[in-house]
Image (cartoon, rainbow, N blue to C red; front, side):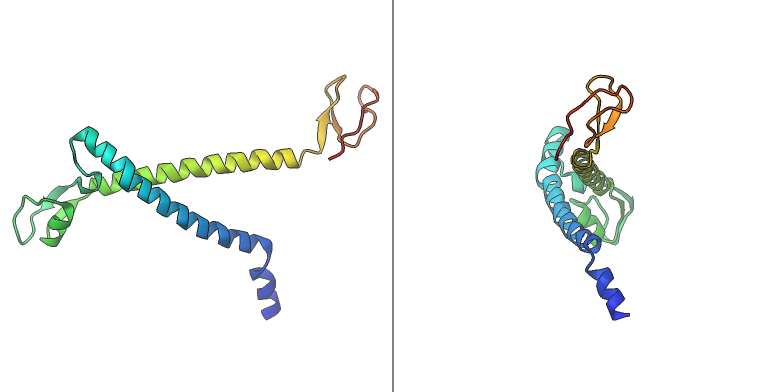
Length: 148
């Protein structure tokens, strides 16, 4: 059983996944900082000098009646608040991470396709032929083999 576990744990895919998770967590921290420290102040400036994370409205007053200066103050007073600014923060974080992952996967797929290309078009009739072919099976033209 230990041998099977060792094979599983040290296979390339599992190690690749572990590295991906660690890098993903680090990337998430960078994106969170980007949103909190750059995007939010810019959005706040545009909408009236408001910190996006402090955008909320009170559903029910707490022990101390409002108005509250921040979401943290409202929660400390026991108020029930709908923190839509935190939801907007999470949505912006998600969109940036999703865009970055999309671009990364798109680039990786392109590189993989280029590396795995085993066929090419015949220069005479455009039929797909193997890279190692010296003659096209469709038009019987002689072609130079592609060596990689």
